[in-house]
Amino acid sequence: MLIHFGGVPREISSDNLKQMVTRADRYEPSFSEAADSWGVHNRIFMRATRPGKPKDKADVEKHLDIVYKHIHAPLRNMLITSREQLVNLTLKQRDELKSSASI
Image (cartoon, rainbow, N blue to C red; front, side):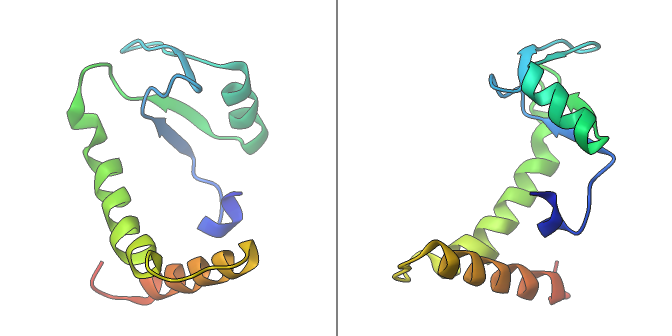
């Protein structure tokens, strides 16, 4: 899964998604068993945003906006007939995004 990003990050911040975070706490959040196992398997430090603190989400929201504008938006009106076609088009858009100097 993370191969498309060119490797594994050292840490991941969760948006307190119920499937990942079982107890949102500012200092010691609890993660689901699946999230913990995934983090251990990939050697990733799991971190949760602070509950009720939208400032923690700004970076994630910015990156989602970039992905939407540069990957999803160009593909939204295309007729895609297979998963393979979708993957290839998405990877092409990702590569164009990575090579652009505007971001």
